[in-house]
Length: 305
Length: 285
Image (cartoon, rainbow over all chains, first blue to last red; front, side, top):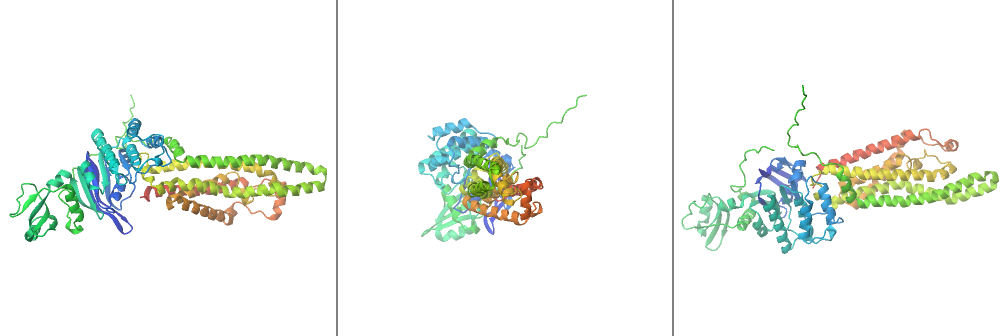
């Protein structure tokens, strides 16, 4: 089952496009990271997936074909919006009760146990919590709904390093214990690398790269060799980025695998995830043809249960 | 032969019956507690005032009516004394009652969605399993029921309070300022102001500006009713008829006119709710 499927998805505000021709498939059981600079369209994509934004083009479905924003989709999706909005005048206990009333499933015991573990008193007003505690409360509310898909929009943005660790720890525990699939956005790459095993790189409203982390790494390599030959390499290979030092050039290329021969006089190195993502983010729009995993072949249509 | 019922259509929505409406009662109460407590509380204070003053007013006018045997001069004196005291107060309360629907409705209505949009909590509220159109409808209806009940009761109490001074001055329930404070018209105007507030809160996405615009829109609607609409069902009272009405306090078209006024106001409210729900469904983040 694919927890997220979009096809030709687009959203324009007036004549300004926020998202263009976004086609994605995220399989179940993954922690997918949505990466990109501010204004890349991350929030727009997430808002479409939870039905808060109506796309101007294309389609979006979650949880094996449920139209985004439909009752069945909302029922199985836990969403924490940017800045983790909660009713500031309500106590934590009231927030739990409220969320319980608004949803089909709500694990009150889990929610209470988690808040106790985090040292968040139930009687405290949500508005009096620290930023980190508020984010944890919002995440706890989303997880207690026992969702199959958890969507977190910039969950780390306002948090200090310790709170970031705690929050990601909660997410990873939920993944391991309940098998919940996760989509989270951030521009803090280094932290995502620890959690995510699937990456979607957005820039200027377009998908630059998408795929399983291992596939992405296996599908790229860094060639290092004489700068004078860089242009030749660039013509022969499918390149992502060329960096020239004085005498040496580093060329990031797509590869079919480690068996692919290295041009004479050049050395091949594996590439790191952060390096790879940054290269795709830096590459000007035209040069960044999606990698092999970016345009997923249409999967056999899943029969909706 | 046994008649068998067909098995239910296996569908994707099987087991996905919508969440029961009754759950929204607690949700609405908890989320709009400030409104649901403060509006009845303020109205209760006003009601207590009307009750106490009403007892005095009723006593004063009963005394005036009883003085007819005691001589014209004394009655004249008492009547003018009552005009400067009780009547002035009653008239002030009448003016406030004309403004009350706007105040109640705007303060209760503008924050319902305006606050959610202003603080960003709509991103929480509208992504829960209950569904955003249904939960919004439930909240609007529940608050509307409370407002209609409270304002209806206030209208009845005011009608009792205002009776003696009105009859004494020869005023009629057919006069627009009195007409709107009683019967069905008063709660209907309150609901209209409330739904204007809810709609503008959704449209403007800020509580205070929505509140201000709601008051303005209410005044415009009031003016429209006064200058245009009401002429069709509430005949204007010629000065001469007031004397006549004093002897015949019942305005013949009073209740039909009340139904018509309440009817178009409720229809307008329903349209505003529908428009609000349309915005909730379509015009979002």
